[in-house]
Structure formats: structure tokens, C-alpha cells
Length: 330
Length: 256
Ligand SMILES: Nc1ncnc2c1ncn2[C@@H]1O[C@H](COP(=O)(O)OP(=O)(O)OP(=O)(O)O)[C@@H](O)[C@H]1O
Ligand SMILES: [Mg+2]
Image: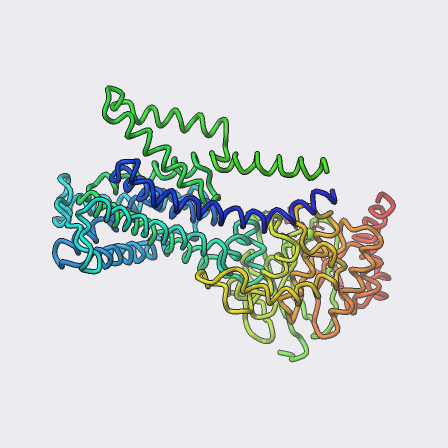
């Protein structure tokens, strides 16, 4: 009992240090990656990784499963696309506008949904996202089934031409790192501490005077904003925004990424996004392309049955176990 | 309205699908008192607490706290007004450390609880106060322990420290000594007495020794209704109480 107590007490700061080293390592990998891997593939991955991190803020750190996050991804994309095309904004402003639009939509969604529990929350968010989908299907400015095409990437700060894929890549990397940092900061902030308390024991948090609904709402708005930021960036990368992003399949895919990688961990969604994007890219060209959803479904089932914590979650558990074993042995 | 009463209920009633769990209960809790709410299992004591703190809405009746009608306001707002409860089953944040449990409560009044852009370390300035509170319940050696690893009795002590962190004007304690060993019971009773110096306490308690030591006034509930009210001597002499409650409790104690 005592050894276990001490161990738990020691792991926390140490884990933080490890996280920091890991982040620095990954940033270096991120900086060098386009020398080895096709930049467009990397950019796609980073956008989805950010999307999944945003989603995980709700699922993993608040404990609420939103099934409507596609609406935020698409809203970011469409609004940025529209603003870039019609107002000639520079890309950083374009992304900002898309992010803000998603934050506002997130506020509306959140107001209508955060008081619901469990499956009802998922259902309300899904229903709202379907409304948004049909709106984008009907609205003129989105181009309906054809999508919004020819979105200009523009020049960053009016200086750096993003039509160069390498420039674009570093811009996307910067956006991703910013988003990732926002998640990290939120989780490890006074606000994050309250979120943790709410997830651990909601009635107790209420009895301590916390208006739980407002905390969930803020978390939802941050999550929606970051999902929007991912969508905005993605629209610039592909110079295209389409209904695929608004479809409920997309809301499902981000659940898959997050669970596969490990919900409630900082890196889980990143790993999950990498796996999902890699698999879908691998199969999309060949004959198996038609079966992609079945393959994903099978992976999902396997994942849920055999390693419920996801790749990163299981990895952390194994590490923790070895760590404690060495301490007890001492 | 009497200014001496910090908490009043008028004809408080709660029905669950035709079954009346709380039946026309009118309580007057005097400021500064330790007031005990006792009664056999299922008498409706926890339900009264749930009504007072809005975890349940009353079917009818009103609740006044400091003269203000709080019947319709939400739980977290009631807590912020200074009426804070503990729970019958130990209510802690299991995967936070013991220190963090208390700190979350201290944080509530700091005004930084929505600050998602600041590092967690801004909360460190609350550590000292949190450690003092832990010391007052004898948990100073466990500050860095993850709460799941605590024994049941210590979790209950932690819950009291967390509740006290809010420095509430009035405390509702639902069986604070339940599940504690004799030594912890005594420490908790002493703690309750000392925090009652400048507060009002309404407590549900099955341990009649604790009740007799602490309570200024006692209300006995039976099947949702008030059976009688008075000081310990009056209440314990009442034959109806003996029949309804003391007999049951005596059995319970011999069994324990
Ligand atoms: N949410 C609910 N729905 C239906 N019945 C309930 C509900 N909550 C409590 N009750 C019933 O109301 C009655 C009073 O319960 P309560 O928990 O208030 O008793 P208590 O006096 O706290 O008992 P104990 O000493 O066992 O804690 C019980 O018969 C219980 O089954
Ligand atoms: Mg009870």
C-alpha cells in the first residue's frame, strides 16, 4: 500500500517531464518530415490530428461523446473558403475567421446540448449536426454536392506564398502545434482542474459551487473552435471544401481515431489520426478501396475488444507497470 | 420570519410516484446550532438534504436560507451562498491527489476557474491553506496520495476538509462518522465541534453517542414526517422515539 502510494505520487511530475521531451522530439520530427514524406499527405494527417485532439478534449477530458463534430470541421472549411475567395483575406486571417465561426456554432450547439447526459448528449449533437449538413447541402455558397472549389491559399501575412507545398506544410504544422498547445494548456490549467473534478464526480463538483453546465459549455466551445481551425486549414490545403466534412461519417471517423489512439491522452488522437489516414490512403488507390468502411469497422471492433485504452493508453499502462515493478523490486 | 433562524423550511414535501418520502416537514434551524436530524433507515433524512440543496425539487413547500427563498435556485448557486453539503456515500475526486481534492474547493472562490490559458501552477498558492485543512482532519501525511488509495474513513475525513475549504456559513453533513473506526469517530466529532464555533451545522447521524455529545437540538423523522423535536434529554425520553428509533439503533449498535 505505502509503496503504491509513493509511486503514484512520484509518477505525476515525472510523466510531465516525459511529455515535454516527447513533444520536443515530435516537433523536430515534424520539421524534418517533409524531406521524407509527401507534404500533402502530412498536411492531411496534421489537420485530422488536430481535429481528433479537439474532439478528444470533450470525450477524453470532459467525458462527453459529441457525435456532431463534423459540423465544426465543415463550418471552419466553408467559412474560411468563402472569406478567402470573396474577401481576399490572408490565410492566417482566413483561418481565424473560420475558427471563430465554429466557436460561435459551438456555443449554440453547446447551449442546446451540454445539460444532456451520456447518449442523449450524443443524440442532440448528432441531430444539430444533421441540420447543419442539410443547410450546407441546400445553401448556394457551398456549391452543394459539387463542393466549394478553387479556394485560394493566399500569401501568409501577405508575404509568404503558400502555393508552395513546403511553405504550406510549415504553416499547417504551426497551426497544428498551436492547437495542440491550446489543448495541453486547457487540460493543465485551473479550468482543466475543474473539468477533471467534474469528470471524476459531477454531483460533488456541483456541491462545491461549480455551475457544471458553464464549464462544459466553455470546453465545448474550445473544442468546436479547434475543430473549426482544423477544417479551415484543411480547406486551404486542398483548396476545396466539400460535404464529406459535414457528413455524420466524419463525426464517426473522429470517434474512431480518438478511441483507436487512446482517449483522454494527449497523443492518442494524433496516433489514431495517423493510423486511420495511413490505412485509408493505403487502400483508397487499390481494389480494396470499396471496402474501406468495412476494414475500418473491423479495426474498430478489434480495437474496442482487445485494447480498450487505445494505442497510447495501452502503451502508458505498460510503461507504468514496468516502472512500478522496478520500484517494488528495489 | 425570525432572524435567529438561518434555515427554515415550510411544509416541505416530496413525493415519488405516489410514495411520500418527505411529508410536510417544517424545520427551523437556529443560527450557531448543531442540529441533528435523526430517524430510522428510510425515514427521509437524505431526501431532506437533497431538497435543501436542490438535488431534488420539492413537490411543495418552501426553503428559506438567511431569510431568502432558495426553493427555486440551482444547487451550485446554493453552495455559493454558503449552504454546503456533504454526501452519505463518500464523495471525493478519486483520481486527484488528496491535496488537489481540497484545492479544487479552495479554487472555487479564487475566480480563476474559467482560466484555461493559465498554467495549473497558479493554483500552488493554495497549497498552504489546503495543507492546513488536511491537518485539521489528520490527513497531513497523505497530501500527495492519490485519493483512491485512501481508506474509507480517511476519504470521509477528506470530504469534510473539502467541504470546510469553502468556509460555508452552514454545513449539511450526512452521516459524517459512518464507516469510521472509534478513533476517527472521536476525531471527527471534535472537528465538528470546533468548526461549529462560527457556523451552523445540520447533521444526519446514526451514532447516538456523537449526537448526544454534539447536538444542541434534535429533530426526529419517521416515515418522512417530523415525529418530535427537542434537546437530547427530551427526545431520548420520548417513548415514541424509543419505539421508532432508539430500539432500531440499539439493535444496530449491538450488531456492529
Ligand atoms: N430518487 C428516489 N426515487 C424514489 N424513491 C426514493 C428516491 N430517493 C429516496 N427514495 C425513498 O425515500 C425514502 C427515504 O429515503 P432516504 O434516503 O431519504 O432515507 P434516509 O433517512 O436517508 O435513510 P438512511 O438512514 O438509510 O440513509 C426511502 O424509502 C427511499 O427508498
Ligand atoms: Mg440517508
